[in-house]
Amino acid sequence: MPFNWLYLRKFILITLGLVLMVFAGVSFYESRHLKEPVVLSQGVTQVKKLSDYFRGIRGTINDSNIYILEGVKPGGTILILGGTHPEEPGSRLTTWILAENAEVDQGRVFVINSANRSATTVTRLGGGYPPDFTIPTPWGGQKFRMGDRWSNPLDQWPDPEAYIHYPSRQELAYVDIRNLNRTWPGRANGTLTEKTCYALIQLIRKEKVDIVIDLHEAELQYPVISTIVAHEKGQDLAALASMMISGTEGFSIGMEYSPPALHGLSHREIGDHTQAISLLLEAPEPFLDATRGRTDRELLLEGKDEFVVKAGKHGLLFEKMDENGWPVEVRVGRHCSTILQILELWSEENPGKSVMVKGVPRYAEVIEKGIGNFLHDPAKADSKRIYYE
Amino acid sequence: MIITILYYLLTAYISFLIVWNLLKRKKWQEEILYIIILMPFLLRLFRLK
Image (cartoon, rainbow over all chains, first blue to last red; front, side):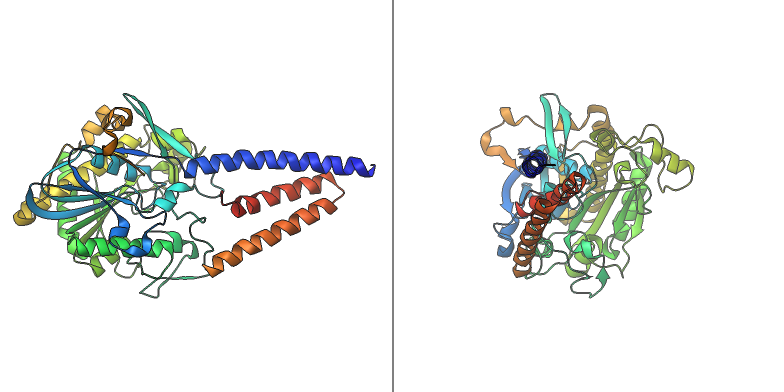
């Protein structure tokens, strides 16, 4: 081949490569910068930033919004964390419903939709995840970032060869140094993810939070599923909530003890390092199962997958799975009802620290009406009541 | 922060080596291979992924 043809071929191939890279790059950029509106409920009385509790997080991507709902009567304080693992969308969608619909008669409710905002801006590397998903609403639809389990490497990189958890010195998986649920209680001079946990711990201490509820979803092949994981301080509350829900709400939820020797998790470290009771809720999400088929938006939202069903027939699952799957409405409805039940039981047992919430749909109502019916149209809302995640 | 900057410098250096090798290849299959390998390095260098 003549010399000039060789270089022409290289030029064409490099140009094709650059075109591919630009298309991919634009997709990644748009996904990272997608704005997710939150139309504040009338019950939201203040919006703070995480950096109000720890200046070290100011100006970073994890300086998240904190939506504060205050009742006229004094009472207890509860913190609800969504987006610890953004690839579990039922968690963030539940906080959206709370921030856009809840009103508080007594006590205070703090809601964080994106506890690890960095992790909402990336999908699993090599996972073929959709970059976003849309929840249908009466006014069209609202688009959300898909997210990942770990902070975006663009915000925290590189990972160490070995991750030694602070302060326990326990060795955890190296990649979990970017996992918000492996870096509690955090440290002021640590990585971005550790600083985020540290800031949240300062919030919990300063605001004298009574209960922290960390919302999650799990694959069906993971034994900790459809359950409330409770620190010792919250075992009675969680057990009672489990019994009440299983008897009245139309679904079953278990209760598990937080392992004392497993460090870095919210249900362990928040309880150990602050005055708060720490609880973690898990709902089933087939999208996360290793044996799933095509990893697309449909699977994410409808939770139906023939391969996961087959895994169930082979006895490989810890939760039932049939052709009805686990739609996102079911998962979000479970979280809503479990939160409400925990608050009702807490308020009965602690009248001076009651947290009375209204306006939040329960399990059956979320399934019947859909999540989109509880999301408000930002085009029709007062611009001062719209915040972006 | 210093380690992060060093990693970005390493990424830039490896990207340069890949491009250098790409220009020296004679087989089109190898050229395509180098272009594919180069993409994640550039995406990280430009802070896109």
